[in-house]
Length: 245
Image 1 (cartoon, rainbow, N blue to C red):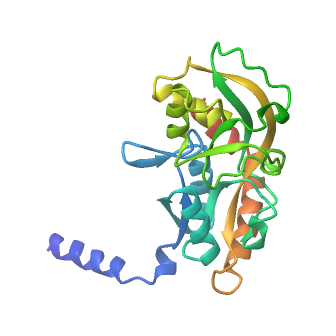
Image 2: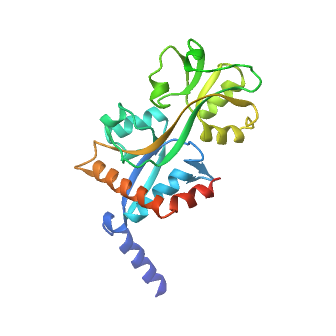
Image 3: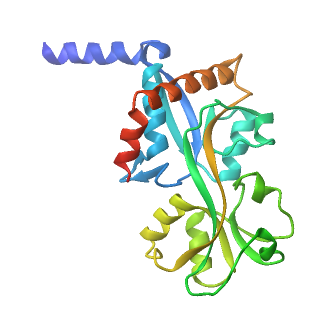
């Protein structure tokens, strides 16, 4: 009798309307630890925890898709996924994404070189015509993005950046400081690079596709804006940050 009841309950849950179980929200992302990464097959990170908390408040079920950066941006623009993170809010991206006014994290963008290389950088002009490792599709903030004259060696991800910088295939790499440090430490490169120049300190955001049905993207941005503000006021963000320090 007990087994029959369990089977009936399971079937009832399976056939419940989707909005009763929680609407699924699909996010494109790429692993940028400690903000977002996979650990033992599960998603973890500061941004992941923040997004899960917000979705919980609004009865939403987040799904995270690990995609190359360019592919993720393309899927958001076409409405194939609901949103993407972590993102700089740029002139190009606000053409096809809604952004909350509240940011999800803060990142420092720096130029790294091999430790002991004696390379001195006082401005981006010192990098003119030099080969610099970047990640394809990444924005490094308005200052770096607008600068011309660099020979960019576009990489698939930050792990590749670390490897080619270690081998001396490029003079330097432009990276988000905390995430790159996390990755290079895992690769055993944590003592091989040093910061030669700090470009900027900017905020990262969650963006939502303008191609979603009706006003869904705009409404999601509004919900996230409200919840991000509340999480900061309630001290939830600080508890999440402490978990990854």
